Length: 118
Image 1 (cartoon, rainbow, N blue to C red):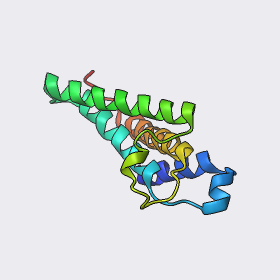
Image 2: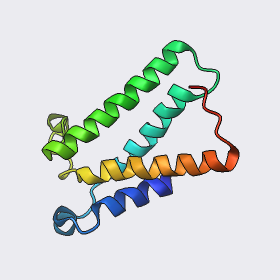
Image 3: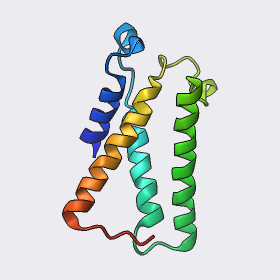
Image 4: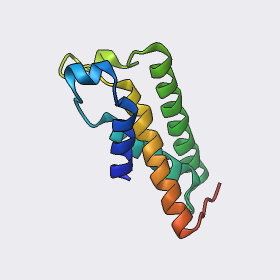
């Protein structure tokens, strides 16, 4: 999943001017992807309580809304929390990381048989 998430983040940023000027500055695309798959597992995994499913679905909805806002506005919503300690986030990598991780999750599910308890 980490490889697919990283590849998705890199593919999403391919050719963007901000990458050629400053390069990648972190693994935020991968962390977004891991969080998407973890929340999907929490929302749809077997043996979960109703409140666990609700939290997983809420986190996945929040993550999706945040990525949509990032791509629509071109700004990181929580930029004030960066405190100038990191460079400019490459926002397309966040969406690419999620897409890559979800592709890995789907491939794993197709190989082992989908068992979603949704």
